[in-house]
Image 1 (cartoon, helix red, strand yellow):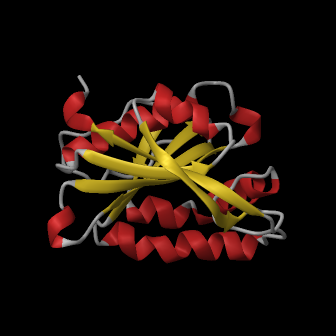
Image 2 (spheres, helix red, strand yellow):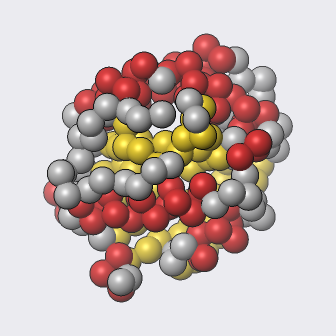
Length: 189
């Protein structure tokens, strides 16, 4: 997998197996992105969807993100294993005048078959570099409280802000709490 040229500033070039997808490459990868999303939700990922999740609905989600990618308001990074998209993460730039220093890390997911290979950490390291290239130094994210990712983020330099109870329905329709994190890249090497 070697997607089209990145849309970020030229000083940012992720290291394989991580790539920054151009909007065109993301459009071409819609079926594979949808398959990854569907598989992760079926495996219990708390990323905004309730079961059953059809391939069409999963593809519609990624399709709805293309305009953000085209306008440079969001970036999509993938981790590849051969031609397969094994993991993804998004960087969503805050567009408010008073928030030009911040971005949200969203939709981190790794295919169950490719977990425990360090891909999530590689994606998170690449997101840091991408954020810096976009002059964004404050990153925020949230995850389902108790999810495996809740342990990953502190290991990646994120600080826990707190827990919001009953924040969202999980993939099985039950309410879960969410844990909110932030990272100040100015404090990192």
